[in-house]
Image 1 (cartoon, rainbow, N blue to C red):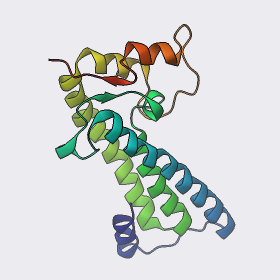
Image 2 (tube, rainbow, N blue to C red):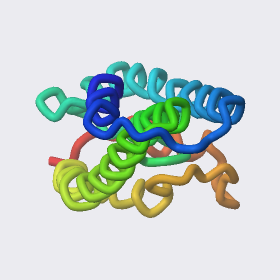
Image 3 (cartoon, helix red, strand yellow):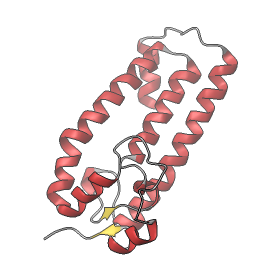
Length: 164
């Protein structure tokens, strides 16, 4: 989230015409929001899922609680928010292009690699989770007829065991 955007700016050090005040406020707010998503999700992954976001140490249990209960990819969303915050804060065309490429690459990676792998690993429990929780934009209003307490009870407290 830091080294590669810096490298993108070094490769294409073109400044964008954004007012300094707007850059600071918007970039700062987006960065704080991204880190506020990212940090607790890493904790949730390790405590509830028994793993990390790294493919070599992927969670052994499907995590559906906390921020994962309102959007399926809050870790990636948080990372992308921080990268976009850097692009805005530094008003750098290089970082904007990098953020754009990372946004597209992240979406494609999730759709064509991560989701099929999770479906294979967790089966119907992941399919049900995928149907009820949006991929990128958080669902801020709960669906009728199903409280979060009932959902957690049905899914084992927010953690689903892998299918055998």
